[in-house]
Length: 299
Image (cartoon, rainbow, N blue to C red; front, side, top):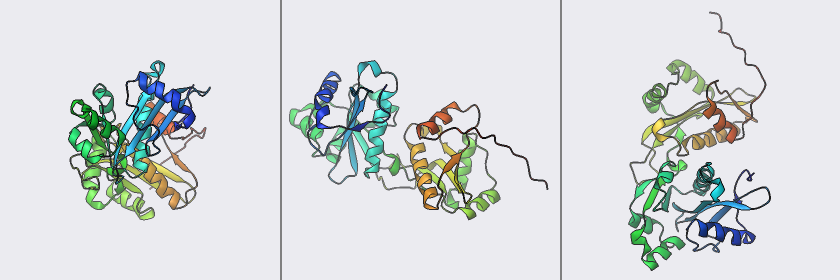
């Protein structure tokens, strides 16, 4: 069994890391540089069975994803996706707005994570000075590489809902089969928790990673009853799933609920939604044995 999360690679991991990356035919340049962020995934006995990492551009706005590898016996089990998502989340935490990478053989894998083909010269310009770019430029390999890129979750404009978003939010809820809250009910909810309805916008058609004016493609609603926080209406448009948007929305609403004094956050998952249940369990939420009872209010 592997460790729950990757851990920062140490000097003692270097031999195993070199072997893993060599078997995966990935570059070894810069592994000893502290500026290269590297993590390893270990089995219970300490054996290194996966790795992931990235380098940042000089201004910190761009991340070059690299060293994503898993042992042969773990391929096809989602481990690689988990490792790649880990690196993307850590890069976003450091403030990077866009992720880039080189890959000639694994395009379908990276597309699953929201990457699309990019101009390799744009990559080389954005990440000049990184070990991989310098190596590929020096050896002439850059001309043979295929570049990929995507915005990071924090760059997708997770922000507070405004009433100018209302029509787009209603359309999103209808398109995804979510019951639409009547406007009066929504206004009453937000009067008690201003700032707790969040939207995520798609800025993939712009190179400006600070632009938050794109189409609304995700929502989440938080409420606080004075004792605990509740999360409702986590919705991401199907065309924008598996790109970290749901996590970005939940990260922000959890932070805002904590800021208003919620010591615990609850939510409801409807029967017949195993994917939703897995998502919340992955984030550390636990099922409770409580039985929910409800009835309409007379009158």
